[in-house]
Length: 123
Image (cartoon, rainbow, N blue to C red; front, side, top):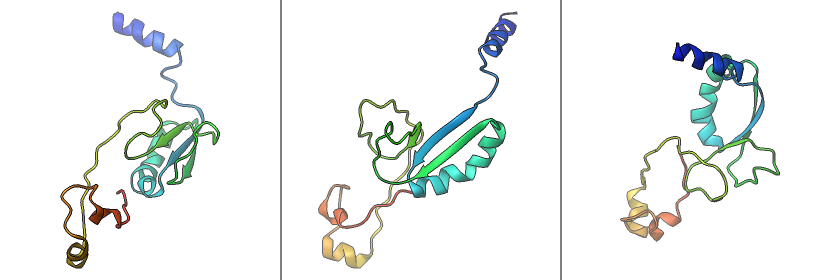
């Protein structure tokens, strides 16, 4: 009986109706192409009343002024006033040619100068 009442309350509040409206999502291009976009068709099929605008951009953006509802980012949170939720953890690997390591040295931690000259990519 309690479960039935809980379900009725959720329906009355619209919790069972699914997501509706338009949502603007910002994400880094590579991250979105590998992890977000492949899952988007199934998500939208489950929520047919939802429209999603995806902004693919790796730069740090001002969420409010650019009208972004959700931003998917990797790394440390730069704005301590933003509500954030940890979604996943990824492994990082240092990959270098023997010639580069011979010139720059083999780093023992990511902050060492040998890694600073190498562009970083998130996968």
